Amino acid sequence: MTNFIPIFPLGIVVFPGEKVHLHIFEPRYKQLISECFESKKPFGIPAVVNNRLQEMGTLVQLTDIVQTYENGEMDVKTQGLKVFRILEVINAVPEKLYSGAIVNYPENEEEAANRQLMQKVINGVKELHRLLNISKDFKKPDEQLQAYDVAHHAGLSLEEEYEVLGLLKELQRQEYLKRHLQKVLPMLMEMEQLKEKVKLNGHFRNLSAFDLDIDI
Image (cartoon, rainbow, N blue to C red; front, side):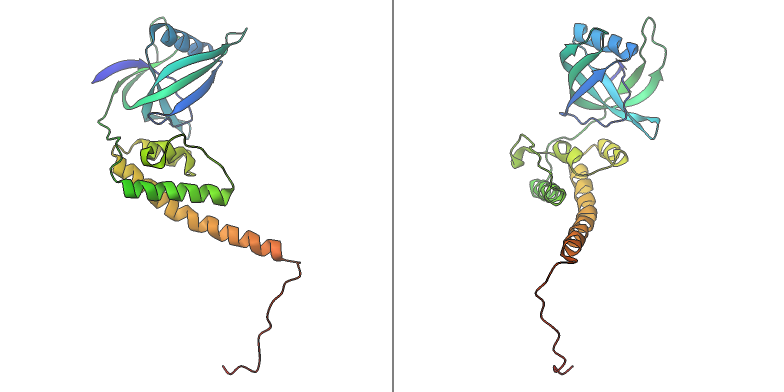
């Protein structure tokens, strides 16, 4: 399926199912949001990484205009629907301030492919949060969580989140997150041990002296 959608490029990655709150202040996006709200049609948020518009993005549905300010700025709620790939950017849309794009929607496997692997990822994310002293509520039981639900909470860079967006099989996303956590968790654990050593420095410590009479 190929179609035209209005686009709102942002320096974030939105995943399908994710709820995103936006503050709208530019005239072109005020127009986009107003029209999408009236028509109940979705729009696209393609990722901008390193100041470059990327080909992948997520179609989102406007779910609520929470507040409209006197100057026309808005606070809105959206929810990610599905991943798209840009085929062509339409910079000048007749009678519109905003741009659009011709997109298609690649087949995307979203069901959890390997429940045991997903649980390892979840456990890794929880360990990451423990080490960072962070508390997160995923608002779903572990057995319902998928890669998209935890990807933003795994300590990925924007570039890495975009790589996850480009993986169109759930098993690939799970494996990517597992490898990432296997890389960062040992580093954090070493930092935690270093912090404990620094805390002990200067304190009175009860240590056993090395016995020089022991045969070596």
